[in-house]
Length: 209
Image 1 (cartoon, helix red, strand yellow):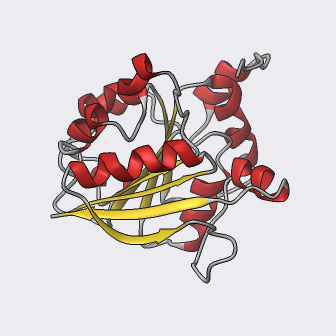
Image 2 (cartoon, one colour):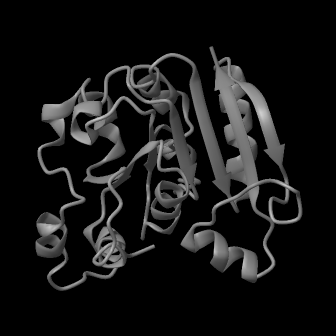
């Protein structure tokens, strides 16, 4: 999908109090940025920010960091936050490939919501649930590893289940139609769009000690 450029996006992003521009300076000590020792959860590929913003509002005792590489979608999250005061939320504009350059044994939970499926086999290593990325995540988790993954893409979901379990993760919770199951859920923009079209939403929460 080709993303449309948004005029002035970079300037709006850089000027936001929610953006961590010098994020590499906080590696291993992101708690100092939040001025507390609360757990830190991250979302890779936060898009327009609906999920991470509502998670932070709903859980003030957890610190949240949203990660997104595209200005054109991150700026929409910045616009949502213009009149908000959410002290437990920060955002980073970066590519997920650099994740181990930014965090070091300090993350409690990772959210992967509606990630790019990269359907061609030659692009497998780009999938955020591939072994390539699972190895990177090993370096960012504080102790127990916990990933929550949601998608509307059945093939990516099946691939991810195999990838997780082959890597030693245990399935803690799973749904093949999240909106029909009695499971607490905070939606993303994509999720609302796909669900309204009648597509089932697949979800799995996995743990590795």
